[in-house]
Image (cartoon, rainbow, N blue to C red; front, side, top):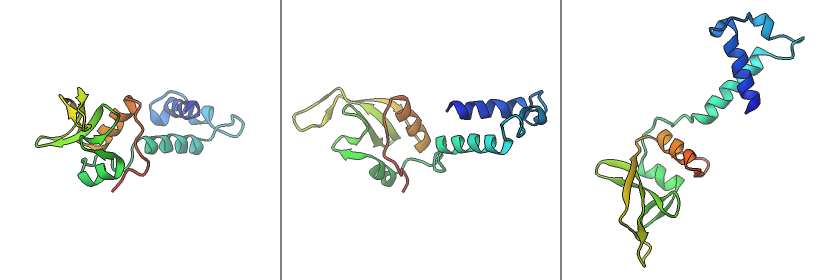
Length: 135
């Protein structure tokens, strides 16, 4: 990550990207940096953080593929669930579980509309989604 950040900072500094440093002062064999390598590092990092389906809506088929389904919905943690209502998809927190394991007194934490929104929320909460999250 530090290498990618340094590459992005070198690119940002050159005049092609609005900086004030000529490319020749930043890149070259004698300096040990290659613009092509830096651009590749930054592009790879961006694509890794922004899957092609990030703006796609959440669908039931995708939810079934990515999550373990329970009686309460798609389980994010033992107390957080992704559920669909008439108004769309949302993340709910469960107040308590009854003797059958059903969520009781659950309340909406936030609505989520796209796969990217859900991935960012899961990442912020420290929740790892299964790999290969696509239909």
